[in-house]
Every structure is written in structure tokens, then in C-alpha cells.
Image (tube, rainbow, N blue to C red; front, side):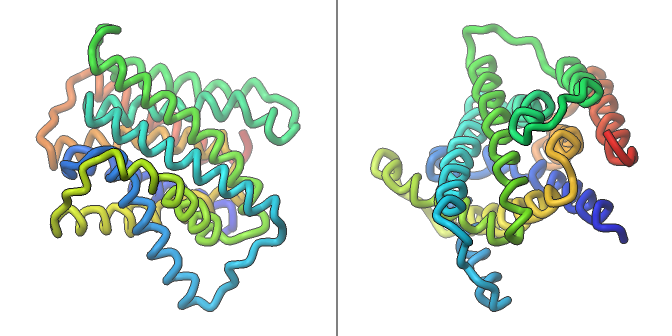
Length: 284
């Protein structure tokens, strides 16, 4: 299997796992800060064990790299907090759909981050994916929780685009698991002060849920996505990531009994079409 194809599969699998992760925002009845803390804590813990067992080095080449991953970890904590809080005050669909604006942000910013010539063709699948998202989006008022939830999710999508650019640079030198470990560790440390402002009452079931969220749907998913960026450009990965709302809506249908209407099916078809178009093209 060619390295680019392998990276593309890693992106697809990670997006599938991320699509499922949104459901924990409804299942885990804890404050968003505590959910995110549990997610990154367990992710960092499992990645630490994985790197330790593999006898791989934890050392980075420079202080600049440590600082870059610290910044990425802070952004990651903010990204996941706004994502889960958006879901808690609105719905799984709103949260996932808002985050999907990540694709348009990445298409606009990639040339700036990597000093590459801007290719206007990159905007075509991104804009068409946004059209699909718009079709799916339910009607809302700017004064209710749905609109605020959507706003938070879009901010979450913007921060994820920036994180992905930082990851694309780091993954050229380090493994995806090492990059994910330092980001999750940094996010864990950043979130500790916020725990003093929330109710820390938690039971064994909720700890198990957070361990599952952190292990499979964060440590593995995050590592796969970062690893995929070694050969796949961010704008291409971002359009594949637009399949996340489709996965999320399907999971919500079967597990939360949320039934999609015709607009969801139409918009989802556009998103899936754009994701596969980008995936099957050799260049974009």
C-alpha cells in the first residue's frame, strides 16, 4: 500500500472514531470541563504506556518544538471544550456540523501557514461541503441555545484547523503518537485549574466512559489523524473530516434515536461525495 493511501485510510478511520466521540457529550452527565479533562488525561496516559512499551524516545529536538506542542495542547483543550459544551447546550448534530467548518478554514489558511501558492480549486470541495452542511442545518433563532451552540462549534472548527497546521509541521519529524501525547499532556495540565470551579462528583461508570473516550476515541483517533497529515495536506484531510457529521448523525440515529429528515440525507450525500472526490483524486 502506498504511503499516501495508507495516510488517507488513517484519516478516514480517525474521522469515523471522532464521529462517535460526540455522543459522549450526551452520555456523560458531567460538566464539559470535566469531560474534556478526563478525555485528554486518559489519552495522555494510554499514549504514555504505548510509547513506553514500544521503547521509543520521549525527547524532542528543541525547546521550540516543546513550545509548539504546548500551544497546540492549549488549543486542543479549547477545541474540545467548545465542542462538548456546544453539544450539551444544543445537540450532537449542531456540534458536529459546526466543527465541520474546519474544512473551509483549512482551505483558506493552508497557503498562509506553509507559504505555498494559493490554489483556488482547493475551495471548491470545501465550499460544496459547507453547502451540504447548510442544507442539513436546522432552522434556528439567534437568541436561543442552538445558535450559541453552533457559534461555539464553529469556533471549535477554527481552532482545529490551526491545530492541524501545527501538527502537519511536527509530524514531519515525530511520530503521530508522540505528537498526540504531548498535546494531550499539555491540555491536561492546562485544564487542571478549571477543575476547582466544577463539581468533581464522579462515579465508576463515568470514569469508565471517560477512559473509553480517552483511549479509543481520542488516543487512537488523534494519533491516526496526526499520522495521516504526514502525507496528506490539511485541506484534503479537512474535506474527508466533513464525513464526521454523517457518521455522527448515523450513530445518533441508532444509539440516541435521533431521526434524520430529508435535508439531512441530502446534505449528508453532498458531504460524503466531496469527501470521496478528494480522497480519490491524486492531486488537489
